[in-house]
Amino acid sequence: MSLASKAPNYEPIARLQNEFKNTGKQLEEGIIPALDQILLSHLPKGSRILDLGCGCGHLVQQLYVRGYKVTGLDASERLLSYARKNAPESEFILSDIRQFELPVIFDAVLSNDVLLFILNNEDLKIVFQNVYTALQDNGVFVFTIPITEWIHEIALKKNINHVYVNEESSLIELFYYQPEERMWEIQVTGFELIEENWQRSNTNWLRKDHFLDEVQSSLKEVGFTEINYYNTKDFRGSEEAGMACFVCRKTSVAQ
Image (cartoon, rainbow, N blue to C red; front, side):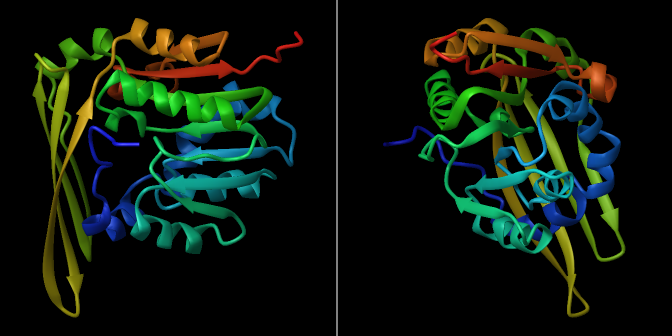
């Protein structure tokens, strides 16, 4: 399959992602309580979960210690090298989320803050189809995605740049909004202290906001029939008010 756009390049800043993003403490304070509420409390221990865009594997490990069989999938070799250290008992797969083909073994698929890097509806539908195919009957797909109707005014008024710092590294993410295209350019700069010298790394990402009805329509087209969504500000606070959390079920044909 020929892809219209490349996956974001995390290779230059993989170490910084590992140190600053979705650490165990951050997950336990934010994402895990939300997952407990909408998914994990209904999912038996031992269930198989696929973490789509797993990054450095911190969420994979959090799910593993809670009794789940977890597979992580990501397009970055360097991120996965950290993931295998952070979650050594789990399985990891190197793949673009628009290209994977896996057996029908998963009870749930998760994707947190990943689908914002899918830049068109066609690719988004491909991801949804891949997920649908990998889910068992009655399996659940939980994902976050930025919604244009919710975030547009916020984007025009609010600075959402991110800065992370510790004694040996720093990570800066500058967000530039392009309202006509509903697109963001994210300029990423990292500094790492290596052998007493500071080294700089740069990478640029593109992020896309999606219309709510387009997301719902794409989910229905690939076969999801039980579709619910929430504003993530209900889980995380106002900072993420423009993101939606979708909870979708692959219902059995026999039902």
